[in-house]
Image (cartoon, rainbow, N blue to C red; front, side, top):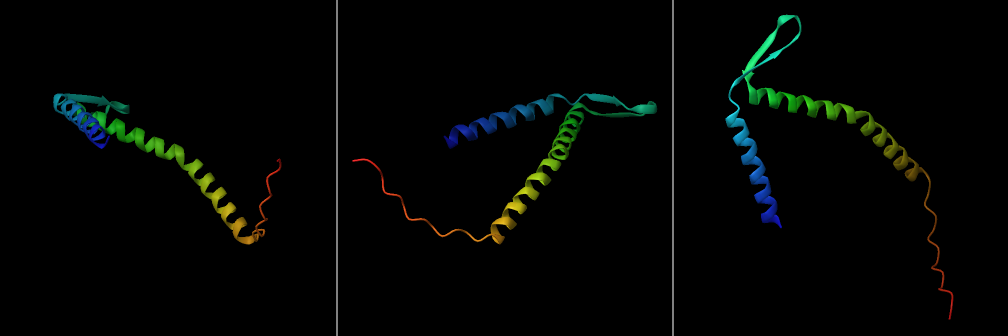
Amino acid sequence: MWLLRWILKAAIFFTLFAFALNNQQDATVHFFFGTAWRTPLVLVVLAAFAAGLVAGVLAMVPRWWKHRSAASRVHTAAAVTPSAPPQPPVPPHGL
């Protein structure tokens, strides 16, 4: 299984590497007020990927904070309240 996973990762890497090598043409990204950015297409794609990654992380931050505060509240509540003594097991009913 680990060999299949390694082969899949290698195939994905070489596909993306070939994509990067084949997209060396200049691309122009036009911004506001007549400004432009001329760069190879692969850098434009990488910049878009990085911007999406940053946007995704920033979108998840409020949920992370909410879950972290809920976990800390549960942790402090468990530390304050003593645990109940264990109950003896109930014998099974029936024959």
